[in-house]
Image 1 (tube, rainbow, N blue to C red):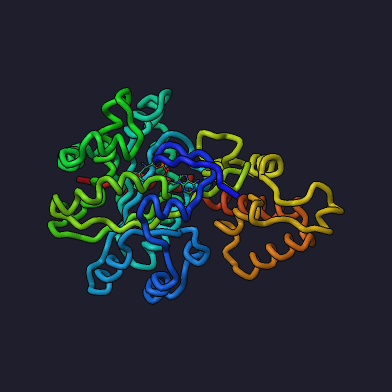
Image 2: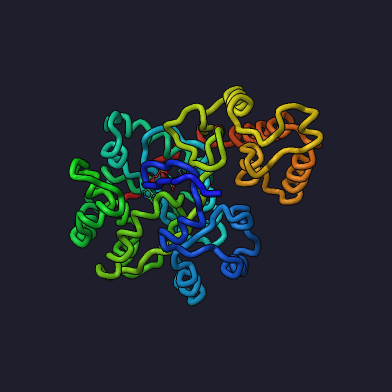
Length: 375
Ligand code: TYM
C-alpha cells in the first residue's frame, strides 16, 4: 500500500510522515545499534528515547564521539521559537538534552529566536512573542538544566553578539538555495529569507567566545534539520567544525499517530499548563484508539497498539519501564486491556508528570536571570 504524500518544513508538517523516506531524502544516517553501544560506553545506560529509537537519525555522531574520546568535549545546542504555549511534544528534544548534559557533563546553549515566528506567522506581534518567550523559558528551566552550564541566547537581546556572525553565514548562502530548501517564493518576506543564518550562529558562537573550536551536538525534531542542511557546509568555510545532529521523530497529535503535535492545533495537543481535568477530557475525547468498537469485539479480537495514540504516548514518553510497557502492549493486543483502561493509565501518567513540571515551572520564575547569557 502506498503511503500518502507528506510535506515537512521547519514551520509545517502535513500528511503521514515516512521516516525511512526522510532519512534518504535528507541524507541523514540511521541511528544504528553500534552507535548506541558507543554512547552506552560513556553513559552506562540508554535513555528510553534511544532504546526505543525516538531519536532515530543523526549526522556525524561518530565524529563527535571520536572527538569526545580524544578528550575534546562538546557542547549541546537546541532551541525554541516562541509563538505559543509549550506542548508535550516540544519536550522530547529538551528532555534528551538534559539527560545528555548530566551524562556527559557538558554545557548547553539554548536559542530563543524571538523574531522567527514573528516573521513567519501572519497574526503574531512582537509583543506576543515576548509574552511567550517568558512562558517558554519557564518550561525549559523546569526540566532541570544546570544553571551554571546552561545559557539562553535570545536573538533580539543578544543581537550585538549574533548579528555579525549571522551576516557571515548569510553571505555564503544564496537565495536560490533557501528557495529550494524551504520552498520560499518571490513573495516570501525578506526577514524569513535571512532567518536561517541566525539559527546557525549558536552552533559556533561558543567557539568564538572560548577562542578555540569546540564540537557541537544539536538534538532536534527532524523538521528543524533543513536549517542545518543549508548552514553546516558554511561553517568550515568560516573556520569552524560542522555540528553533529541527532533527530527525533514527532510526538503525534491526539487525533492520529502519523503526524506532528502542533501548538496551533488546540484540541490535538496537550500543553504543559493544562489542568488534570483538561488532560482527562482531551484524552478521553480525542485520543485516537486502536481498540474495537464494542467491548465484546475488543475482548475477542484485541486492540492495535501501533495506531493507538495512548499506547504510543506511553511508549514514546510516559512509561519508561520496558517490562511494564510490554505488558500493556500484550494485554491490549490480546483484548485483556480495554481502550478506556489504557486511557486511564495514560491520563494518570501525564497528570503526575505535569503536576511536578508545573511546580518546577513556578519555581523557575525566580531563576530566569541565572540562565540568560551575560555578555
Ligand atoms: P519550535 O519552537 O517549533 O520547536 C522546538 C523543538 O521542538 C521540536 N518539536 C517536536 N518534537 C517532537 N514532537 C513534536 N510534536 C514536536 N513539535 C516540535 C522541534 O523540532 C524543535 O526541535 N526554529 C526552531 C527553534 C530553534 C531550534 C534551534 C530548534 C532555534 N535554534 C536549534 C532546534 C535546534 C523552532 O521553531 O522550533
